[in-house]
Image (cartoon, rainbow, N blue to C red):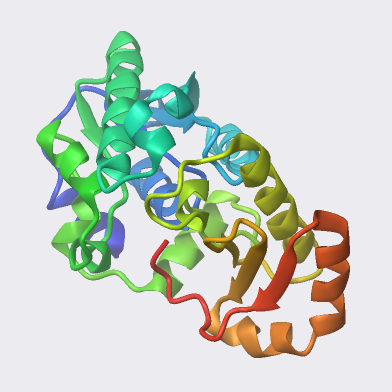
Length: 257
Protein backbone atom coordinates (compact mmCIF):
# COMPACT_ATOMS: atom_id res chain seq x y z
CA UNK A 1 0.00 0.00 0.00
CA UNK A 2 2.64 2.53 1.00
CA UNK A 3 4.75 1.73 -2.03
CA UNK A 4 1.91 3.03 -4.20
CA UNK A 5 1.58 6.14 -2.01
CA UNK A 6 5.33 6.63 -2.14
CA UNK A 7 5.31 6.47 -5.93
CA UNK A 8 2.94 9.44 -6.03
CA UNK A 9 5.55 11.60 -4.29
CA UNK A 10 8.63 10.72 -6.32
CA UNK A 11 10.14 12.77 -9.14
CA UNK A 12 11.16 10.94 -12.29
CA UNK A 13 14.73 9.67 -12.33
CA UNK A 14 17.05 7.33 -14.19
CA UNK A 15 18.87 6.07 -11.10
CA UNK A 16 18.08 6.90 -7.48
CA UNK A 17 20.72 7.61 -4.86
CA UNK A 18 19.33 6.71 -1.43
CA UNK A 19 21.00 8.05 1.70
CA UNK A 20 21.01 5.10 4.10
CA UNK A 21 22.15 5.45 7.70
CA UNK A 22 21.48 1.84 8.69
CA UNK A 23 18.57 2.73 10.96
CA UNK A 24 14.92 1.83 10.63
CA UNK A 25 13.69 4.78 8.58
CA UNK A 26 16.31 4.64 5.83
CA UNK A 27 16.12 0.85 5.54
CA UNK A 28 12.32 1.06 5.27
CA UNK A 29 12.69 3.60 2.47
CA UNK A 30 15.21 1.37 0.71
CA UNK A 31 12.84 -1.61 0.91
CA UNK A 32 9.93 0.40 -0.47
CA UNK A 33 12.08 1.55 -3.40
CA UNK A 34 12.95 -2.08 -4.20
CA UNK A 35 9.23 -2.82 -4.27
CA UNK A 36 8.78 -0.15 -6.94
CA UNK A 37 11.95 -0.34 -9.02
CA UNK A 38 14.58 -2.79 -10.20
CA UNK A 39 17.56 -2.93 -7.88
CA UNK A 40 19.84 -1.76 -10.72
CA UNK A 41 18.06 1.60 -10.64
CA UNK A 42 19.05 2.16 -7.01
CA UNK A 43 22.37 2.87 -5.34
CA UNK A 44 22.54 3.03 -1.54
CA UNK A 45 24.92 5.69 -0.18
CA UNK A 46 26.25 5.44 3.38
CA UNK A 47 28.41 8.04 5.12
CA UNK A 48 30.83 6.30 7.48
CA UNK A 49 31.80 8.89 10.09
CA UNK A 50 33.53 8.90 13.49
CA UNK A 51 30.25 10.14 14.98
CA UNK A 52 28.35 6.90 14.29
CA UNK A 53 27.30 4.58 17.10
CA UNK A 54 29.27 1.76 15.51
CA UNK A 55 26.75 -0.81 14.23
CA UNK A 56 25.29 1.11 11.27
CA UNK A 57 27.64 0.06 8.49
CA UNK A 58 27.17 -3.65 9.22
CA UNK A 59 23.41 -3.26 8.93
CA UNK A 60 23.69 -1.37 5.65
CA UNK A 61 25.85 -4.14 4.22
CA UNK A 62 23.53 -6.87 5.48
CA UNK A 63 20.39 -5.32 4.04
CA UNK A 64 21.86 -4.23 0.70
CA UNK A 65 23.27 -7.71 0.13
CA UNK A 66 19.87 -9.25 0.82
CA UNK A 67 18.05 -6.82 -1.48
CA UNK A 68 20.68 -6.95 -4.23
CA UNK A 69 21.23 -3.18 -4.09
CA UNK A 70 24.63 -1.62 -4.75
CA UNK A 71 26.10 0.01 -1.66
CA UNK A 72 28.73 2.71 -1.73
CA UNK A 73 30.41 3.58 1.57
CA UNK A 74 32.00 7.00 1.77
CA UNK A 75 34.28 7.87 4.66
CA UNK A 76 33.62 11.41 5.89
CA UNK A 77 35.97 12.74 8.56
CA UNK A 78 33.50 14.97 10.35
CA UNK A 79 35.96 15.51 13.20
CA UNK A 80 38.10 17.55 10.83
CA UNK A 81 35.32 20.17 10.57
CA UNK A 82 35.90 22.88 13.17
CA UNK A 83 32.18 23.63 13.65
CA UNK A 84 31.61 19.96 14.45
CA UNK A 85 34.61 19.60 16.75
CA UNK A 86 33.57 22.68 18.75
CA UNK A 87 30.01 21.30 19.09
CA UNK A 88 28.31 24.65 18.68
CA UNK A 89 24.87 25.51 17.34
CA UNK A 90 26.01 25.14 13.72
CA UNK A 91 27.42 21.64 14.28
CA UNK A 92 24.56 19.66 12.78
CA UNK A 93 24.25 21.89 9.73
CA UNK A 94 28.00 21.75 9.03
CA UNK A 95 28.13 18.00 9.54
CA UNK A 96 25.12 17.20 7.35
CA UNK A 97 26.40 19.55 4.66
CA UNK A 98 29.74 17.74 4.49
CA UNK A 99 28.09 14.32 4.49
CA UNK A 100 25.55 15.28 1.84
CA UNK A 101 28.21 16.77 -0.45
CA UNK A 102 30.31 13.60 -0.18
CA UNK A 103 27.31 11.33 -0.87
CA UNK A 104 26.11 13.45 -3.78
CA UNK A 105 29.53 13.29 -5.38
CA UNK A 106 29.81 9.52 -4.92
CA UNK A 107 26.25 8.93 -6.11
CA UNK A 108 26.69 11.04 -9.22
CA UNK A 109 29.79 9.01 -10.09
CA UNK A 110 27.55 5.91 -9.95
CA UNK A 111 24.99 7.40 -12.33
CA UNK A 112 22.46 8.63 -9.78
CA UNK A 113 20.62 11.71 -10.98
CA UNK A 114 18.12 12.15 -8.10
CA UNK A 115 18.72 11.70 -4.39
CA UNK A 116 16.45 10.72 -1.50
CA UNK A 117 16.56 10.45 2.26
CA UNK A 118 14.18 9.07 4.89
CA UNK A 119 13.29 12.15 6.92
CA UNK A 120 9.75 11.62 8.23
CA UNK A 121 6.80 13.98 8.61
CA UNK A 122 7.23 13.84 12.39
CA UNK A 123 10.83 15.02 12.12
CA UNK A 124 9.83 18.04 10.05
CA UNK A 125 7.99 19.33 13.13
CA UNK A 126 11.30 19.48 15.02
CA UNK A 127 14.03 22.07 14.61
CA UNK A 128 16.83 20.15 12.90
CA UNK A 129 19.40 22.22 11.00
CA UNK A 130 20.66 19.08 9.26
CA UNK A 131 17.40 18.78 7.36
CA UNK A 132 17.92 22.30 6.03
CA UNK A 133 21.30 21.23 4.66
CA UNK A 134 19.64 18.37 2.77
CA UNK A 135 16.82 20.53 1.43
CA UNK A 136 19.27 23.14 0.17
CA UNK A 137 20.92 20.45 -1.95
CA UNK A 138 17.69 19.30 -3.57
CA UNK A 139 17.50 15.99 -1.74
CA UNK A 140 13.96 14.62 -1.69
CA UNK A 141 12.35 13.37 1.52
CA UNK A 142 9.23 11.50 0.36
CA UNK A 143 8.21 10.36 3.86
CA UNK A 144 7.49 14.00 4.72
CA UNK A 145 4.61 13.98 2.23
CA UNK A 146 2.44 11.41 3.98
CA UNK A 147 1.99 9.90 7.42
CA UNK A 148 3.61 6.56 8.06
CA UNK A 149 3.64 5.09 11.55
CA UNK A 150 6.69 3.92 13.46
CA UNK A 151 5.24 0.41 13.55
CA UNK A 152 4.93 0.38 9.75
CA UNK A 153 8.50 1.61 9.34
CA UNK A 154 9.71 -1.16 11.63
CA UNK A 155 7.71 -3.72 9.66
CA UNK A 156 9.25 -2.64 6.35
CA UNK A 157 12.75 -2.50 7.81
CA UNK A 158 12.39 -5.99 9.21
CA UNK A 159 11.14 -7.24 5.85
CA UNK A 160 14.24 -5.70 4.29
CA UNK A 161 16.44 -7.77 6.59
CA UNK A 162 17.36 -5.29 9.30
CA UNK A 163 18.32 -6.92 12.58
CA UNK A 164 15.03 -6.87 14.58
CA UNK A 165 16.90 -5.61 17.64
CA UNK A 166 17.98 -2.45 15.82
CA UNK A 167 15.82 0.60 16.46
CA UNK A 168 17.35 3.91 15.49
CA UNK A 169 20.77 5.42 15.84
CA UNK A 170 21.86 9.00 16.21
CA UNK A 171 24.98 11.11 16.10
CA UNK A 172 27.29 10.50 19.06
CA UNK A 173 27.86 14.25 19.33
CA UNK A 174 24.37 14.49 20.83
CA UNK A 175 25.73 12.77 23.94
CA UNK A 176 27.74 15.89 24.75
CA UNK A 177 26.26 19.14 26.13
CA UNK A 178 25.98 21.79 23.45
CA UNK A 179 29.11 23.91 23.45
CA UNK A 180 31.36 21.27 25.01
CA UNK A 181 34.13 20.45 22.48
CA UNK A 182 33.95 16.85 21.31
CA UNK A 183 36.54 14.39 22.57
CA UNK A 184 37.30 11.21 20.63
CA UNK A 185 38.45 9.46 23.80
CA UNK A 186 35.30 10.26 25.75
CA UNK A 187 33.10 9.50 22.76
CA UNK A 188 34.59 6.03 22.58
CA UNK A 189 33.96 5.48 26.29
CA UNK A 190 30.32 6.55 25.88
CA UNK A 191 30.01 4.27 22.86
CA UNK A 192 31.22 1.32 24.94
CA UNK A 193 28.70 2.10 27.69
CA UNK A 194 25.88 2.01 25.14
CA UNK A 195 27.21 -1.17 23.51
CA UNK A 196 27.19 -2.95 26.88
CA UNK A 197 23.64 -1.81 27.57
CA UNK A 198 22.47 -3.00 24.15
CA UNK A 199 24.14 -6.35 24.80
CA UNK A 200 21.98 -6.93 27.90
CA UNK A 201 18.66 -6.10 26.26
CA UNK A 202 18.37 -2.32 25.90
CA UNK A 203 18.53 -1.76 22.13
CA UNK A 204 17.76 1.96 22.25
CA UNK A 205 19.89 3.78 24.82
CA UNK A 206 21.62 7.12 25.19
CA UNK A 207 24.58 7.72 27.55
CA UNK A 208 24.73 11.49 28.04
CA UNK A 209 27.88 13.11 29.35
CA UNK A 210 27.33 15.95 31.79
CA UNK A 211 29.19 19.23 32.15
CA UNK A 212 31.72 17.91 34.65
CA UNK A 213 32.91 15.31 32.07
CA UNK A 214 32.71 12.70 34.85
CA UNK A 215 28.99 12.03 35.16
CA UNK A 216 26.83 10.14 32.64
CA UNK A 217 23.03 9.98 32.68
CA UNK A 218 21.59 6.95 30.89
CA UNK A 219 18.26 6.91 29.08
CA UNK A 220 16.30 4.07 27.52
CA UNK A 221 13.12 4.29 25.46
CA UNK A 222 9.86 4.60 27.37
CA UNK A 223 9.09 0.86 27.36
CA UNK A 224 12.50 -0.08 28.75
CA UNK A 225 13.31 2.86 31.04
CA UNK A 226 11.51 1.34 34.03
CA UNK A 227 13.29 -1.96 33.43
CA UNK A 228 16.58 -0.10 33.33
CA UNK A 229 15.76 1.47 36.70
CA UNK A 230 15.55 -2.06 38.07
CA UNK A 231 19.10 -2.79 36.88
CA UNK A 232 20.96 -0.28 39.01
CA UNK A 233 23.57 -2.89 40.05
CA UNK A 234 24.49 -3.26 36.38
CA UNK A 235 24.82 0.51 36.07
CA UNK A 236 27.21 0.46 39.02
CA UNK A 237 29.24 -2.23 37.25
CA UNK A 238 29.31 -0.04 34.15
CA UNK A 239 30.53 2.86 36.25
CA UNK A 240 33.39 0.78 37.64
CA UNK A 241 34.48 -0.36 34.16
CA UNK A 242 34.01 2.96 32.36
CA UNK A 243 35.44 5.36 34.90
CA UNK A 244 32.26 7.46 34.82
CA UNK A 245 29.74 8.08 37.56
CA UNK A 246 26.67 6.58 35.87
CA UNK A 247 23.09 7.32 36.91
CA UNK A 248 19.64 6.79 35.46
CA UNK A 249 18.23 9.86 33.72
CA UNK A 250 15.01 11.13 35.29
CA UNK A 251 13.25 10.94 31.91
CA UNK A 252 13.08 8.16 29.31
CA UNK A 253 14.42 8.72 25.81
CA UNK A 254 11.88 10.78 23.89
CA UNK A 255 12.96 9.92 20.36
CA UNK A 256 14.74 13.20 19.70
CA UNK A 257 18.52 12.69 19.37
